[in-house]
Image 1 (tube, one colour):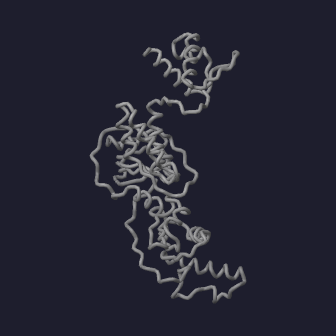
Image 2 (cartoon, helix red, strand yellow; image 1 turned 180 degrees about the vertical axis):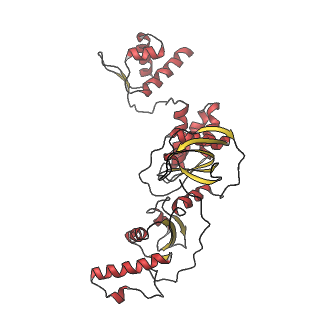
Image 3 (cartoon, helix red, strand yellow; image 1 turned 90 degrees about the vertical axis):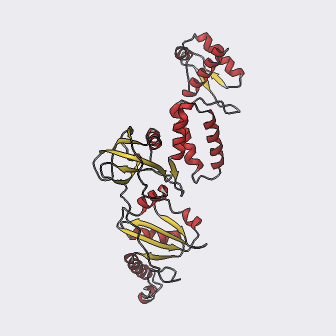
Length: 356
């Protein structure tokens, strides 16, 4: 009986693996006769699994969709990949399925074999998700994420080939500490042994599966919140201008329009939000802010405020509704789209390490 049950589970896993199987192919994979395959197919049907059969040389068996979800038989890598996806969704901004993801994670954890539990725990502890509006994601090899998660959990250095922006592909050896997802991309926070400094790496730019090496002693972290550290690194430090804008809209409303990898948002009272972001061009943030359709106040830099004055005059002349003197605000109110208050002093944070 035990042998028959094990064979039925093996047959069910094969039917889930491929869309269609011939009887001969199933018999060969299971090391049984085709007659045994037909008998086992009948048993699975009696248990409620909708298995169809097509006659002829080109025919075969297919597992169809039933009224209930059948047991899914996953190998080690598939189980870990599902755990990683559920972890990201459970803590992410997708509405309505966070609770279901948590319940699925609990069920998966209960039935995982002992050899996979350490890796499963590592996945849950080594991943953070930055909330923000959804956008097209960059493809990432799940094997890369699994390897980095294992390295983080076991405190092992990782070696991999990496393609940095506008640089030749090279080999990196790092001490990994955290994986962070923005919804569009995955980032790794790590200590680079070559540069002897903290770095953030885009996982989709990895060119090879990370190879785990010797163990390392953990270093003091560059920030208490590594997810916020990554967000600051990818939104501000690599750019020429540090833009600070006060928006006349609540934080939740602004967050629906501004991705986490574009800017850091902070609530400024119940009805205002301060946006901090890095740019190499001052025209682009002006266009984006104007397109949001809300009042805003430019706090920094001064060059952006001058650019706004010039643009305001040009637009007014193009519309023919105002004179040049009316379109250009006085020096006492320049830099504020709402004119609500003078711009407060802005303190620049210490420069963050570059993002590769």
